[in-house]
Image (cartoon, rainbow over all chains, first blue to last red; front, side):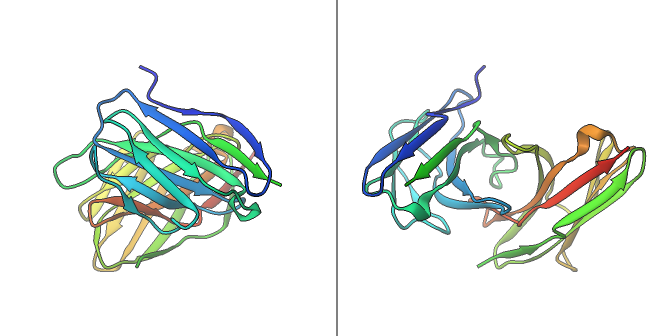
Length: 115
Length: 109
């Protein structure tokens, strides 16, 4: 099992460019998440999807869009990249215990620089 | 909203015991998790407390007190490989997790 797979691992963009970060999980999890992590800081939730076909905003959704393409895949799109979006992006998934998620499985991250 | 507080840095020597505290303010608390992250790596799950009390997993234990909005991670028999950042995270209404700012643990020989 690969777990949670993110692509690309590294990306450099110019201000105003767009790109999509891809994420796929092979654990048959219902919930998927996108977090960003800035140096010396914790993870901040951008968007999450509790099930196929649903998405919800997290703490810092501005400037991002997401698509839950199917149960396996959850993509994050930057329509017009800004230097403030320079960060490490982590995708995660979780199984539903019945009372909610208890354990997050993370991808290896995407290091994004916006010049 | 939710906010979590934890110390920014902790230093200990190999073989020692260290406790990392986490206090939280939340309106939809279901449980408290702990994650470990080595430099350049992804966070990995350590433990989850859905109920008050102590959960033990090998050298690591985690504690939760809902009445005090407080939890801690206890690391015993510290090893050099335990040098990493540790994050507490609140289960938010059973829908997602809100993370604390992280505690950087340095283990000295």
